[in-house]
Image 1 (cartoon, rainbow, N blue to C red):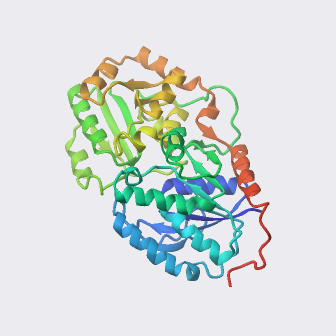
Image 2 (spheres, rainbow, N blue to C red):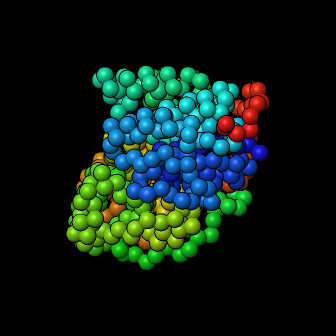
Image 3 (tube, rainbow, N blue to C red):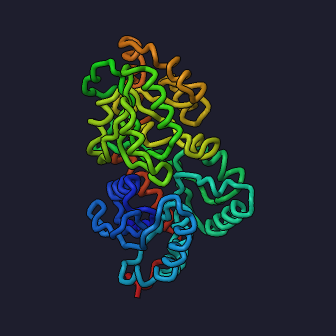
Length: 390
């Protein structure tokens, strides 16, 4: 059985739980180590007890850099007694900085996989800091055996033009994970809630103040015909007044976090539309990503709303589904949605449901294929002399 040491930037990130599930479903054994965004260590992630590398804070680059430096010193002690892995996966640049230290603790032949699912705005700067970060990434990635990323636009706009990683690339999209085999044909879903009001769901990492303000303006203008349901984890580092802002808006409601995949069907089937727009890093990462909510919303029949010029918008345009906005304004939203009627919505939803389910979901066969690809990376290396760090 392939043994993976998974180094992550935030062990409480729901996407980390999803990747662990994929790896274990595919037949891998996982050891989890990483930082946390909580005040106390996390005891359990999918039955795993994470190796705690300390606390970091969202949006605090200097603090995170110091945490990485501190972890680099203590990493060998933290990993003491851990069975030698066959493979190390480093999620994000800060963990790639620790992957080499972990490999030296276990043996220099352990291959490293670099998982990068966002391109941080700092590495795209043209100043000394940006150039230094890109140079650091190129240096750390020189021995990486595989790059895992989630959008073709990340490759086309960053990794390829900047020549950051020479390793082969594996595209693993942010799809929903099915516990059973994916079968052809449209899925039978629960009945759509009555409208009006038409309900827009914005779920996941809530980090975009511009989206929040845009939706607030639009729903006030529509005077009750539209409402917005927010669920997930608000980035209070970006808008510390998030809760007060939402409470003051008559047509916005925040209903807290949710479990993925346990709650996905119920939360998406309770809305008509899925907000698949993000201006957090406008012109860069936000335009290149293919977000979780795109796949999850379409999987459960919610009609996606996106900007036409983004990678998400281009993807939806190719499939001829969703609502694509030419501009991010209340006027554009009103023009696209304001006169929504039941027969038009039924057509929009039917187009979403007519797509091949594999467009939105991975199943166990995909997990096995991913783990097999990872396993092949380990074949060329020599067997380790020791079974555990000593």
